[in-house]
Amino acid sequence: MKYIKNTFFRSWGIFLSALVIFFSCGSGFDRSNSSGAATFSPEQRTEVPVFSADSAFHFVASQVAFGPRVPNTEAHRQAGLWLAETLGGFADTLYIQETRVRAYDGTVLNIKNIIGVFQPENRRRILLCAHWDSRPYADYDPDPANHYTPIDGANDGGSGVGVLLEIARLISKRPPDVGVDIIFFDAEDYGRHRFSNLPDQDSWALGAQHWARNPHRMDYNARFGILLDMVGASEAKFKREAYSMLYAPNIVRKVWETGQQLGYGHMFLNEDGSYITDDHYYVNMIRNIPTINIIHQDNTTQHGFFPQWHTLGDNIDIIDPYTLRAVGETVIKVIYSE
Image 1 (cartoon, rainbow, N blue to C red):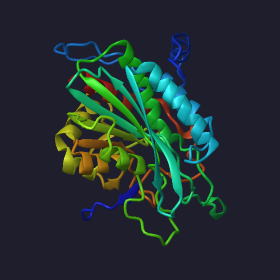
Image 2 (image 1 turned 180 degrees about the vertical axis):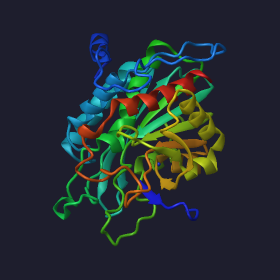
Image 3 (image 1 turned 45 degrees about the vertical axis):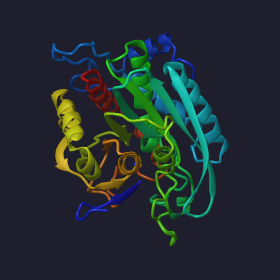
Image 4 (image 1 turned 90 degrees about the vertical axis):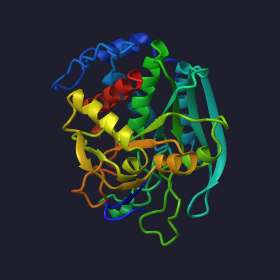
């Protein structure tokens, strides 16, 4: 995704129950509210299921195990098959949207958006999304020798998918009162290389651009959407991303207030963030679905994101189950509050 400073205006079959129980016992973190449970208001019509951070972490690790998920590679192909099988095991309907897009440098990319639909007959819908590809270049790596090396993308891509797969598992067992669509967008992170002189316009979020113009149902609409990107690193800070505030300020407030009520106010900050050209930008601009972005922003870094962004350091070692849980609990409470 492309970062714009905020000074002016400018996206495995069913997961075995025994395995979930195994991972849910003895988590490797010790934080406040570590039970994973939360108290919810009595007016909620459907009980909110308990989000498992260990299950989400397992889903992240499973993606990373394939290697960098760069379009046109074998690792990308194998990871896509696994994602489709896993999400398809939870969803009522699975769509695989395959297409070819042209990258900023002229490379033709074979991509697929993977879409899981829950309660397709329900007209009241929520869109949840993340990108599943990983960056082909570690162009912010401190070692220049790595600037054309693909990255694992554990946080940048993998974390959002991991959280959403756990949410998919939960809503398949206890449906909420709204229909849910989970989309894993492809080719989000094949934007222009940092040191390229080629044009950058619309070179990011290629899968989301394609879906927004060609949704899996031509009449598709949703009440709102939530994009998850970089939601797994330790000490994550989620500011109110500027395009989200422009297009869906009420949804930002709803999500941020929910996170704060759950005890995650140190992560969901009452601070304005920058404009981030990410998948949600095109869902808003082209599809007109008010969609927000929960994304780790850090003004202390050169690029404005978590320290390992677009480096070889974006690997499974930086993923913190506590952060996954904070985001997962927040999003799932929002879903079951609708």
